[in-house]
Image 1 (cartoon, one colour):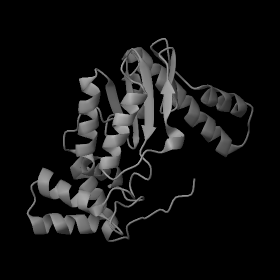
Image 2 (cartoon, rainbow, N blue to C red; image 1 turned 45 degrees about the horizontal axis):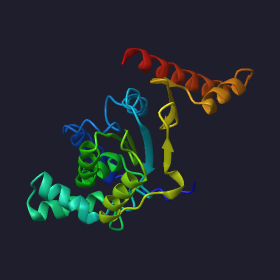
Image 3 (cartoon, rainbow, N blue to C red; image 1 turned 90 degrees about the vertical axis):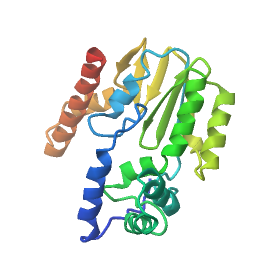
Length: 232
């Protein structure tokens, strides 16, 4: 996929990095897994013991569709900055009236700027005893009440916050086998996906240094999946 990378210049980048560090210190809801001391594997594990179907959705163009006004509202309403300070912070944290795609602060700032939407989605899910988790722009719901009607309610909320769902990435899974962030969940246990297993097998008889490093990274990731499944 082609992406327009909007990286801050040498003056702004260390400022963005510092803001990211400060934002990362704010306590986050339990449903967020794209944060320090968490991972996409822990995100998948959160659904392992849930019963019912799973719905995966993806917020389309998450950073570019998160507007400057949402950022200003975060600094002004949530952090209670004075209006002029919130306005200044929104100016230095955005480009072309949206969150940049290549900044160190984009991930955490996008969450906080969109937290009202995520909270409303979580409230909807909780009212139906559905488990909701978020990893960046991927949102997963698991529960007995997950169905097309629930998906339509989710779509209504996302649309109301000026976002859209990537229709090509909407996925429903049954309880016997589901996938979250590319990780298989079978019989309430995490399993490396067939794709990852095939990639590892194809790299086992190699001599190229780059491919060897790639193989090492994939084996480490597979072992991490297995370790998380055993530990939690």
